[in-house]
Image 1: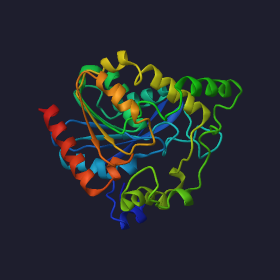
Image 2: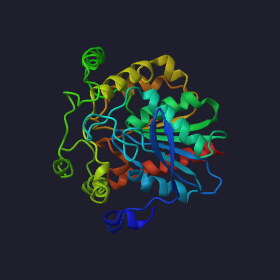
Image 3: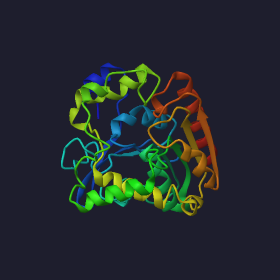
Image 4: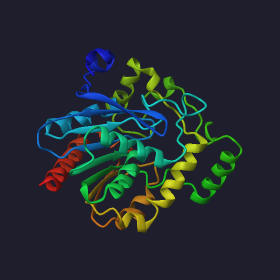
Length: 315
């Protein structure tokens, strides 16, 4: 995609994605991915976006990897970005099961020609959760996984209670409707930077995330469906809150987290990440959820750690 598709983003200095979109059908949904081949000898990197995110948001990350010789494959998860709307309200995020997300990535990996050979995975938030699941799913061919603010469990509420309430609402036919705890939000309000925001301390980083919507407002999503909540908590209970699952992630894992994390449950980092057989964790004091859009010092250190990690596992 060239600058012409996103003139506001290009004018703001955001890098554009190289490569090409690819499309597959998974579970009856047309799923969009983006593949940027580097031919530089580096490990192919699968990028797993977070809740409500889309390929273009990761263009700076993809450009960095591509410049270092890594092929990059990014996914718009089913129901996100340009992979359609699955909820009753076009703003809500919905999925019946996280298995649908995994199957969609399987199909894109196959279509991109990455079904064999060694790969690396990077995921943020919900994508960090899915990156760990993919690392276990793909086994020995995963050279390493980078988990940024990974969703070990969504928020500091009792898992059993959320699962019970969500299950009742799903059975009552409300699966595709906004969850009571996650109502729709106004784009005009969300895009305004406030020091009390939960994403990043960096005003520029915060505002840059919203620039893409000036060119493609249809990419905006706000709020989770009841079904998404049920699926997310079920997936976390079975995997990232399960020591037996975490022990199945045999590849090296680099987990980077923020000290002022309030989007996902921060306490789960200390409780669950040590169960990974080969993991290193670093917490950035004072940083919030969006580490890729945090202050310059955080981003500089983050990229030094990620690049060193990929160099080490790629050898």
